[in-house]
Structures are given as structure tokens and as C-alpha cells.
Length: 322
Image (cartoon, rainbow, N blue to C red; front, side):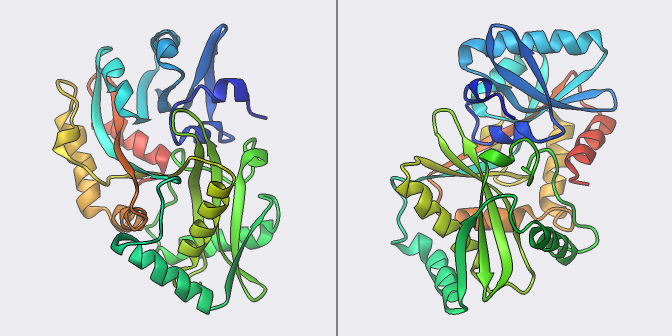
């Protein structure tokens, strides 16, 4: 189960991923919040920065850094939000943009207007193809969901990878809190999306795993997401977060003064420009922009001390980006 008292202090739209089955937690008695990490070689890779309120961020981070130093572990951090960049820079970390995250304000969302034309077109097409969406329990239809996962990855090509660590999962300790919407054509499950709770100043839901069969009708995923979005809005949820797209929305204006690193910038940009056979950031970003998100913000990657090619390699192997 999840320690929801600590979890709810996490002001990060993707914080629920910190409760994936293989993620470890660093906590301190009397300090609300936590640090989520995984070990890779001699590195401790943190997810989401410090998942705590601002007044507890630095004590929790300093405790974790001391714990790692005692074990001779180098610290790497993925998906830091902008408001914590200065905290890591002040402790000697290099900080560079990794990608961008996208969020929809459900109170302001409307299907009207030119910006949502593609969503209207695609969802109407899926409906004409007799695609029906309904919510089911995350543990239901497991065999069909597994089959979709396999077909989805094979369709991406032999070099494709599923990102690990920065995406959610089906099952595990987070399963009771997750929601799953599936799409059926006749009696055949053709696609699904899972959604996870989001806490912090923009509470709501996180659009997480999305999969569809290669022969699913055009608009299947859009119809699933639109259905879920309307359900969440009807329940009073405030935000639907579409999550991070690594290597997307890179912009020099997001650089952190005096903390950037030329090697990290170069490798991230090389993957963004030439790595589509590994991870299609462009298609992921295009899908999210179709929803006319009300908030787009950078997320960052940080290295304790000067990053090396070996450290970058270990990080991207952990996330399965390479």
C-alpha cells in the first residue's frame, strides 16, 4: 500500500510514479514527504526531485545526500520541476532541461475552437467505427491488456523501447489507486489508458500508460482520453496532467543560469533531433499539443558533480531510453 500522508505532500503532477513497485523511498521521521530513487551501479537516481512541501525540501534533500555520501553513491535526478532547480544548483548539481510536461485545466477545457478540431475529428471517426469506451478495474482483462502491450511494442519496431522509471505501471502497490479506461470494438479490447492520482497545487489525474492495438481505429486513444476527461471533470477534478515528454519542448530560455552543462545539453538535443527510432518524442508531443494544454512547463535533469558519458549512459539505460 501507499503511505498517502507522505504522498499528498508531493507537489509534482507525476509524483504517483514514485510509488512504482521497484522504487525505493528515503524518509525522515517528523519530516513530511519523501525522496524516490532507484540504484544503478554507483548511482542513486532520484525521481521528481524532492516530493515534499517547500519548507521541508532542503532538510529532506540534505539528509538524502548525506546518506548517499556515506555509501559513496553519486546522485542523479530526473524530472525536477522549475521551482526546485535552484535548490539543486546551490548544492553543486548541474541542471539541464530534459523535456516538457503538459496539463489541462478541466474548468477551462472546451472542445470548441480550431485548436481542438483534430480531437473532434478523430473522436467522431472512432465513434463511427463503433468504438465504445468504459471504465474497468485495473486488474480486469489482464490477459487482453498484456496482449495489447506486446502488440504495441512490436509495432514500434525492433529498436523501440518502453521508457521505465519515468512512466507508471499496471499492477504493483499503486493498483488500488489507479483508474483504467478501455476501448472496445464489438467485443474486442483495442486500446486502454491508465490514470493515476495527482496531488499538490494542481490536483487531479495523471494520464499515464497508453496502449492500443496497431489495427485499432483512428481516434481510439483520443476517444478514451476525452471520455475519461469528462468523467473526471464531472467528479470535480481540477486538472488532467498529460505528463512529461522527454526530449520535447527544449528551449534555451529554460536554461538554469550557472548550472547548465554542455555535454548534457548536447546529448539531450542529439536524442531529440536524431533519436526517433529509439523514442518518438515528436509524436508524443504532437498528441499532447492537440489537447491545447493550458500549462506547459519544463522539467529537468540534474547530476551531482560534473556528469560523465558513463553516468549519462547509466541513466538512459535505467529509463530504457537507449
